Image 1 (tube, one colour):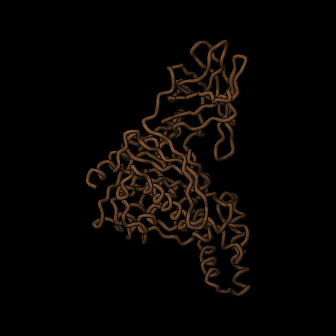
Image 2: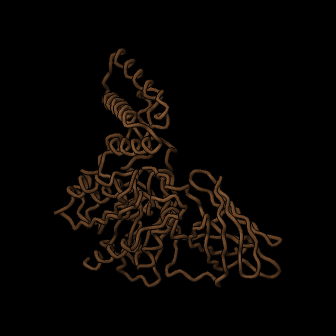
Image 3: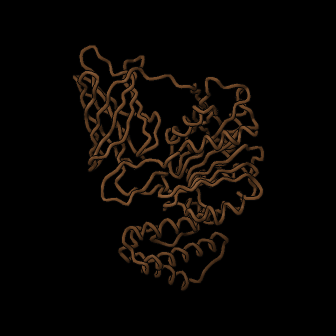
Length: 446
């Protein structure tokens, strides 16, 4: 499930400093980013390596949930500093600023967005309450997975542990570091890994193989001398909420499952839900959305038949292609996921066709561990109603089930405002501490 746009253009936020004289930028800097009268807290930690190179990491609890997100292209000299953060959409944000005394001032530019930044030096970077250990393990198909294990300094021989499952698309460990840091600070050994590369080979990416990766990660945690093998859980976000029940159904010893903004629909159903709302938001009429839904359902049915080896008369194929062409000529539907040509047999390895009828519900029925489901009422990527209508009935009565529903919150678990004034998105009250409190409660009975 891809991420949706917020009410206002998302702005990746950073900050930086320059050094003058004998001053060094190493240490912690705290302050805020601001735009159009709104502001958001921001922290940057700078350090110098043994080679003298300056590096930095940014942390935010609004706009994006980041902890120690790496800065790139950090350069300083002559009283100025520059650095960048590259987003997954390849739209780079660039900071340029100055340092005077213990204050940094500058601005971030990302596309048409400009954000002011003011930071103040607060001292050296505080030590973490956990150690970070590099790890490298192998999935059953031979794919090497790299990552880190965050081990609390006070961890004992029976520490609980957790594995994180990414959302859709290409992700590195940095995209889940916020959650890994959260759990590690609360006593959990946390496995933070890069996601296997999306699209590198059409056959090497499917939900079963992502579950294989997670199970290999669980096996890696079980080898740790401080982890209790019976106290390991998983947390999946978005697409990871589809993978989590597969993992839990295949590992009956799993201690808990947390699914953030999951969908109870099949892949095809959720794709139609998501695309329909996107078309409506772009101004499509109800009739145009109905035309889209009819066309994509016909394409999906055709693909199902093709995958079973069924052949269709040329007249039927021609009629279907004409209907597809007609729908794609509607201006409002040009941004839809309707293919330009009917898929052929050789196209069926594409992920969207391969996953077409993936259904998470049978896997949820096989889950034996306590489950926490977190839902955003205004989620336009994963139908929030599907959680109550499909997932909950599959598990309630068999396992301890908790559902946390946040009103006014979107798929990114940020509050959405119906406002003409700019604001920096922020998480709902109590989030994300809700997650660790729930997991600690489960572990106290395990």
